[in-house]
Image (cartoon, rainbow, N blue to C red; front, side):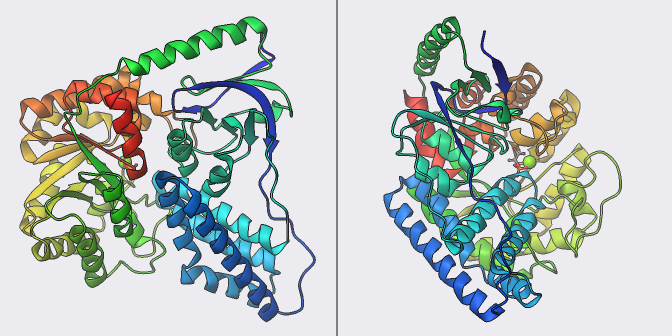
Length: 512
Ligand code: PEP
Ligand code: MG
């Protein structure tokens, strides 16, 4: 019997066995106040930021394309002017350099978190970037990884550290926090590194403990006995065979999920046939008032111009109003009231401006096939409302996301399908709401989508959409998981949309 079995969210499908190497990334430690004055502090901080930028450039040049695109996006964060102004404000208020950097970066991370799960997962990356700047400021040395195979055990790990890790003797990864949709998880999947995130009780692991990391079940066995080691070795062989038999036709469109038009180029480089989900939340981030019609036209036009003769599906704003933006009114109380389309109904002006900007951009780039969709629609009435409104602006193709179990029931589903041009299944939300989990607080594994309660709903939505002759896509993270993707294809899904960096890996896995 192993000493302990810990459980978390598995990322990928592999198994690894090796001793633990405990790693703690830099955390903010208050140091003596640098009363020398904010000007000197600011100069040192700017130099540290420039150093981190340079290190990132070096990593980008050495990284594979998946990691490079993630690191490029992080590098952009460093040139965000609001970050420097946040640091200046804190220095002027008397904070020392470390505190000023930590405060400004966590402010930026918090703003991201308030935009929902997808961006919350990226907030940790911004925190990591801040830690990196602090590390340079304090002249701290990088930790050296062991030269023999090891499983890295950390509280959390950002993409910069993750990139440093790939290429070392690492064979597995365990983190106490983090989600299966974070950049770290994306990079771990891309590097085929068996990983379990959100492992409760990871503190019980000691340096050098022998660990079995089973990323399919999300289990971590601490100091397993010999019999368990043998069993896991056999299971490992079987799991490889299971992937090999998922041979398949790629009878499905493969699209990219994007959060900004700046990601278009790399999406195309990764082979995206179009965009299956353009999240518009970033446009609204940190804004004191709703983004203007002109600024939205600019962003959507940039996006559409990058995909001539291809399909681009743009989702209108999906914000949680529990951390409201100053210009958003709170929705009425009730289940799902503060999410998605329902929240937009209380802020109809915001939705109208978005639709107007989309329609105007579509006119400018007629060769791009623009489809628009509403998030978190909870009734046929809402679906009809959205489609009517979108069409009143001249938008030709309008659909909705299927993300709550209520709309997967026979009758409402059929009514929705009769009203829309297409549907897209958001498996992230559909999984959390069907299994009654909280996406941020709970441990949700990518494989949870294959639990019978969730999978049966997905199968029904796809079957009904096909019999109604309406395109049906999947744009949640599960689309990137080869085992789930194969099931969705067997059910008859017409498109899969995922992070662009994961497209090549999925194609490889489906072709094998
Ligand atoms: C989903 O819920 O699966 C989805 C794609 O939407 P988001 O992750 O943005 O909530
Ligand atoms: Mg969703």
